[in-house]
Length: 289
Length: 260
Image (cartoon, one colour):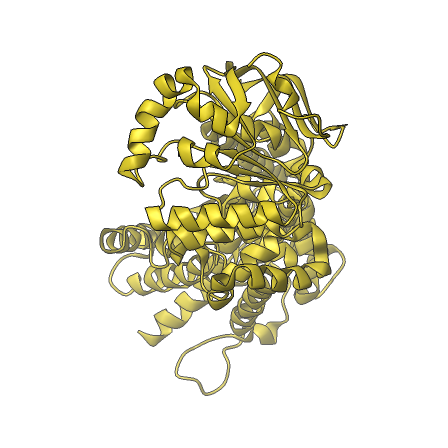
């Protein structure tokens, strides 16, 4: 039992990191970004490239992966989303375009890296379970949890205590009032993509440390991510983090009773159960923090 | 009414709206509206529901696209300009509803109002707390939990953060209890007395026109009548068309200003 919860926390930490980025983009830009999962995959492959071809230690791939993800996010906005906003496209158009972007990204990854399953080159000792603990956890898994906590503390500090973070929360709260208050909306949007894309990519690297890497990894992670942000209250960054961990635990714990293939379905059942009791999610909608 | 576009006197025009056509998608709500606000005045726009009063306020700040015509502030063309430029020029806006950031604290709302000030906003926030003491008490509370009157005060304080020369208020009394409406109008008079020019859109026509130097009546997206505020109150056409029902509603109190 404890073991499943521990596994759940590890998976949940990854879901949380990626879900926070998804919910930031959703609440600030009002974009349900189906390409977010493939931005997660993209991050894993950036790290894979650096890890395998340059022999870079996996932890040193995190900063470049973050930057690459941020760049991908900002580039996507310049090339696609900003143009659609200017033409006042409807929300369905945005969703369909994001699905198109998701497919394009995934197939580009298949084109360059192949469709086969791959692994990071990790030091063997990182795969050995840690000493006398009640549960079996490898150093890498512990590091994943620590990384998620550090990343989330960073996001929290940025949103709470910086001018740009305040402006991001204001945009999530009331876009037109932000606009007429003189907030530099373009700058807020750029930062949203830096964070959203960067967190997606870093989440992909973390995911690649606990699961095999293949071009579909992010796409399949999209379901638990959505479950997490709906569970936590759509558009709430803290809710997304807590929701991510909860979904991870519920999914892993279900393996005790059900075949492992049903994990995703169990996560969704849990989400439905919560929404029946708390229709606005555990933390309520609309507020970013 | 003819020749009224001089604004009743020969002062300097701070804000000028010339033949503006604006609206949403393919629908022009405003169809050639003219408006002139002189420095130091209080000017009120009244008119029936759907006349385009709020649309005019939004058009000034670029929230609605201006298709034709021109808006000038202090002589400079601000048609379609970025709001950050407009507010820095000294023209600020208090929208009708959703005029605060509900999930941000009172203090953070004011910080957002002073966004373009950067570090200088701290001193200005202290001035706002002196002007609106209730906001200081509530500074760490979320704006969403404030009462209607407190929220309107916060909305005005947020817009005053940049120390603007002119304030545009869209239905400042909408949805407020009668005694609170009185406080809000008193605050608007204070703001005016501190040397600021005021343009108001108001449903509460009698009260607003009584304190205004000049009033405009919009109808169907066009200028209908304009005259000195008190004279407009006595204009038979205005009384018949708008004040009859609006006056009665204002007499009924509180229910007058539910519309945009």
